[in-house]
Structures are given as structure tokens and as C-alpha cells.
Image 1 (cartoon, one colour):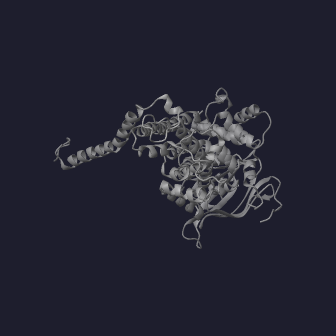
Image 2 (image 1 turned 90 degrees about the vertical axis):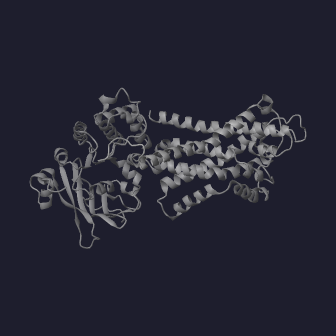
Image 3 (image 1 turned 120 degrees about the vertical axis):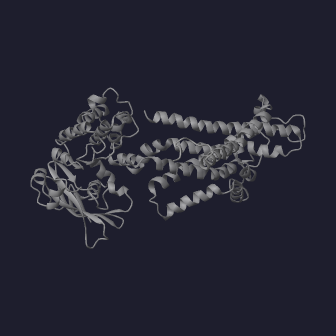
Length: 269
Length: 297
């Protein structure tokens, strides 16, 4: 695929066009079409094995790091297919940041955790200010302003995850991807992260994978429901697909698909 | 109904006791050689230690009164080991980085891993003969034959597998999440390895390097074919291209001499060699503990 400047509506920042992702011969997710709106929080929900994390990781080419993972189709970001051969995945990841399931701070000080990304991205401004701003945005400043030189590991799990968010914000991405950021956290930390996300929404587009439907309902504007079914031409395994994509309100109040209704109401998962 | 109380005479309990004691005895026997060897050398060699030992040249056999010192051999061992490290550490760490970070488990990396394992099993004398054929007999190094440089090369062959393996394994222990974190903030593969993964694995790599050095420093066979031996002080850079003494070869040579003075010198050299290898090993432990502490800051 060569650079495609297809017409996408202005407020669409990222769009998936007929994306299928496979691990070796195993197809994880098939034929996904999906548009992510700028400044929105979009949540991806669905049962285990439906490929929602796979789709999320494909959005900033994190899948490159998994051997045998291949993608067909187009992921348009800013009018460019990020899977074009000429695209540098490092540059993609600078503009589309990611927060992972397990908090994974660097084995460095809190300050360095944030400064690291900024520095390698060629940041030349006031580092102290950047660290403070990033920590403030991630609602962590008050808790750690007196121990910036302590190890990132000295923080609690929830704080570590907010440190990871701060680290991602520090490189000023346009989109922040979050892969079940609260699954390893307690409810209070989860609440804090959700508050942080509401704050971040003003400046960033957020796409979040979550297993927690209440969380999707609380934080997101749009919700994509992924499901997995057996295809007749497949090798018997289940293949994920995008079952329904709509505003969160519609998905939860009046879903069009029967499976969505069943998943939302907890009939399977 | 059988009693719940422990019954000594039950066959399974007797068997259990028997095997427990057997394994304890085996464990004791296993460390006996080390204890005896170290004590024996400490006693035999320790009594020979004096200041002259470190400053004098060894005297040629025949002068039964005074065998001199081990200064050239001591310095030679340091130089040869340093040369080996200069070659083996960059190549080994680099190779380990390739295996752990870049290779995708294909045929090439499997071949390298297999090759490294084979190399680790190659008898040290073969490494010596190989360098002899490659460098000494061809006089390829500026016309010099036996030289400290050739000795260092032979030892580097022995160090390589240890360094590659520990680097590979050390890097594999670094959790993938850490790599993702770094790549996720837009770091390139190279920055990630240099700034995140390598520092995290520093402890195990350093330990492997030090163990590799300790192993190389005590090797004799490869040096007999490459560095040979010298009785004379090392005075300048040019001496690298000539025969060079080393503790291991000094022990080999002088232990075979019929003269008592030379034998005593060999004991003294054994003492120094064992002590330095022991302290290098202990140093690697301290290094490990030290980096473990600072890493968390």
C-alpha cells in the first residue's frame, strides 16, 4: 500500500479499513472497519479472545514486536497508512502513546521515568516543568512531588500506572492507547485513573480496552463491541470481529445486535 | 486403623531417612575437594609469600638456592587476561544482544546458540592449537611468533561462550513489559537496549564477564601454544609481541623442575593464582549485590 490520502471526515483521527490481523496462520480478528473520533474516549469491549487488545496494539504498531503477527488492510492516521513500508514505527509510537495492562515503570527514579521519553524525543525545554506538568495531568503530582528521586517502584500499583500515564503524556502524543489500564488495580486507584482520563480528554484522544463494562459506560463517548465467532472457512478456531460500534449510550441503552445485548447484560463474557 | 503418629520403623520413613542422609553425604563429598585444595595451596604456597616474590624475575632452573620471583608472570597474566577481555567482552555482549533482542528464533540464531554451546565444550588446548596454527606459525602478527597477544586471543575464545550465554540469558530475564514501555514512548530499538534493557541486565552480564575472566586467567594449555613463557620483566608495549610469562604456565613449568626452589615458587604462584581467582569470584558477588541495590534507586 502506498500513502493513501483518502478523504476521511475531519474529526476522524484514526481509522481502520478492512483490517485483519493474524498470528502466524491463526486469524485473530477479521475485517474491522472503525473510525475513531478526535478528542473522544473510545472503549473497546468484548469477551476474552475477541481480538480487542490485538486491535489496540495494531494502532501504534506494537504488534510488530510479536513474532509472526501480520496485518492486512489499512490503518489511517493523519491520512497516512501507518503500515506503509516507508513508515517508521518509532515515529508512529511517538505520536500514538500507549499505557499497558501491568504498570511498567522503568527501573529509574520517578523524575527519570518521565524525562526518559521526552529526552529521546529531543525535548530541549525545561525538563523540571515538563515533569511537573505531566505528573499534574496524571493527577500524581501531589502524591510524589517530594520524592521525585525515589524509584518508580516505590509507588503503589495505582500510582505506578498513573506514572506510566504521565510518562506517556510527557511525549505529547496525539492519541493515548490504554490496554486494560485498571485491570491490576483496586477500585480507588481505578477511580483516580478514570478521573485522570476525563481530564486528559480535553487534549488527547483516548482509546481504551476494558473488561469492565461499567468502566466503559463511565468514561467513554463511543464504544466498540468485539465478539468472536467460528467462521465456516476458518480452521475451527474463533475469529474476532467488530460486532457493533456506536455511541456508548446507544450501545448500552439500545444495542442493535442481539449479542451486544447479551454481552452487556452479562449473559456471556 | 493406622495411627497418625510418626512411625520410625515404617519402610517409607526408613527409606526417606536413608536418602536424606545419602544426599547430605554426597553434598559434603562434593565440596571436600574445594576445601582440601584451597587449604593445601594456602598452606604450601602461603608460607612462600614475601615481597621479593612480587618484584623479582624468576631465576632459570639450576640455581637451587634462590628461584627469584613471579613478577613477569603476574603482570603477564594480567596483560593476557586484559587482552582476552578486550576481545571477548564486546564481541560476546554484542552477540548476546543479537540473540536475545534482535533474532527472531530463526535458523541463524539457532545455529549461533548451538555453536556457542559447542564452543563452550571445546577443550582449552584446542583453542591454543587453533591460535597456534592461525597466528603463531603463520607469523601474521607483524612477524612475531609466540606472543602475549596470541595468548590473549586464545583465552578470548574460551571467554566468548560464557559472555555470550550470560548476556543472552540476562537479557532474556528482563521482562518484555519494560521493552514495550520504552518502545511505547517512542524509543528506538537501539535506545531501548542501551538505556533500558542492558542496564537492567547489567548485573547478570557483569557476573558472567567476571566468571569468564576468572576462567580464562587460570588456563594453561592454550598459553603453552601461544604465549609460551618468559623469564624477563615486561618493560614496554613492544613486549606484547614476544613470549610472555603467565602464572599458569609458570606453575606448569616449575612444578616439573627437579629443583626444590623452583617447586616452591610454583606453589607460591599457585597460591597467588587461586587467591586472585577466588577474589575475582567474590568481587562478582559484591558487584551483583551492589548493582542490585543501586538499581532500585
